Amino acid sequence: MDDETQILAENQPIPPQQIAPQQIQIIAPQQIAPQQIAPQQIASQQIAHPGMQQVVYIPLNYSPEVNLRNWSYLPLGIGITIYLASVFGSVSSSGSDLISMLGTSACCGLFAVAGFLDAAFYKGKSEWQASTGQSNGGSVTGMVLDIIFGVIASIIAIWLIVALIAFS
Figure (cartoon, rainbow, N blue to C red):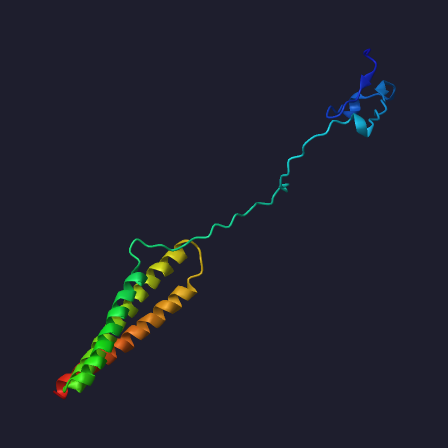
């Protein structure tokens, strides 16, 4: 190559003010037959477009240290057991009304405890969902319904104890 001829190569642009028409030499592209190309492995990969981000969904599960929902099953089971024992005990004894009312009151009281434990579970879950940016509408609804259930069960339990004391 001499000083007057410049070969334009790919990725080496020459500013237009430095190029004179007599300095340009055009080289024809070479032709390659398909059998001359060596087989290559092409790795499959996703093409990332500029400005687009990939989002990976990671499912989050609420798992408190003390799961009050699991503990709420205990008073439910005990309440049902006491109620069934009072029903079967009242059939075989002479003071059937007294035993039945006492068993029903204990059952309702334990159901109220179970409802309040479940409401406490939903309170923690609602706060956790809010802190992780999730919707907590279902947890708040569950908490409110559990509190209503607990209050109704407490009122019935107290009413049965008052009736038991008044009629004894």
